Length: 107
Ligand code: FES
Image (cartoon, rainbow, N blue to C red; front, side, top):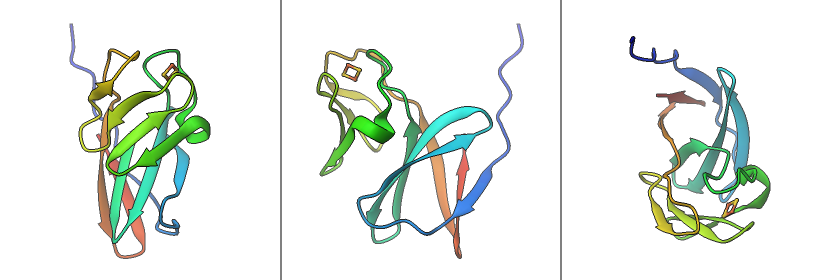
């Protein structure tokens, strides 16, 4: 069995407003990019691990946590772990790097 290959990093414009949650396509994967202000960006999988609600529509950021408003699971922005169920599995976290006027997302 072969290991899954990492996808190449992807650049997107750095034009986010503080508090914005935006869905982007990362090589066919739905990813949300969250901007907290002060050059602090996070990128996580866009589908809640509970019943797959779209976190770009029902996600809310409270402090350092992402809340899925479908059934109120809470996830850590830093590492995607579940802080409160009903979700049991963590969200996938992507690397985010700020380069000049771009954000680079990677695995
Ligand atoms: S789909 Fe997100 S908590 Fe149920």
